[in-house]
Image (cartoon, rainbow, N blue to C red; front, side, top):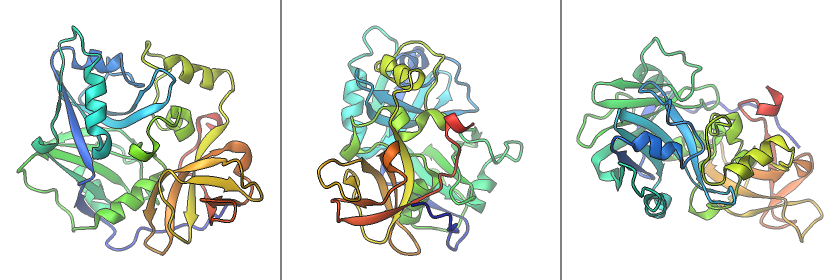
Length: 315
């Protein structure tokens, strides 16, 4: 069942909040972009200073071990913003592949301040020359880097990063809980520890939101990703959903009447300002038109909502 009732962004319509759940991996050196180009799902060889990349780090089986918002701070420095609960294992695993590349990977979380900007604050932080409808556009404003994200409920969103100790971005304070809700409502899934190594990128719609480049060279898991895309083997997608009761990340989703075989999992969830929880759920496409429950066949019912973007097959 799908509900098309819109949900507006609660007051204040714009603001800023520190993002304590995120960390930063710094990749520095003349081979920084080249190294990442060979490891992640995105093209870093052609990355300029005016754009960011949504990207994933995969296992050899094509499953997402981590996801990032990545951008250059200079020609020899790339920053990977990711959840803190996956930063240490991701840094360790990526570092194993540096070999002779002139690139050094470090945990740079303490070196930077990270804020999420919503509504008017996000709009004001980006130069007026950058179209509001251009996700992954990046601007350097003073000592800060600002990345335009996918909107939530029609409201602009941006990621703001600056050296630790810099002045906070302009904007009324908003709660990090509100930001986490807009993350879900944007439809852009972020991999966290409970769901690491579980999804091929297309299962999280990454090919439709700028998270996969099919024209670049090889990277770990690339063959699985290409096969899923071009041989019609993809059977799961990510959907936006609402639950009137709490649901947890990693919880299984069941179709009505089948208590044995789950048809999906909860990828991301956040408290909704109007009550209940909104979530991103990765589901078998065939199950998306029926009744769904989280946790068990008689568990918490969820209602699917329209995605805020078109899937690649629909474009």
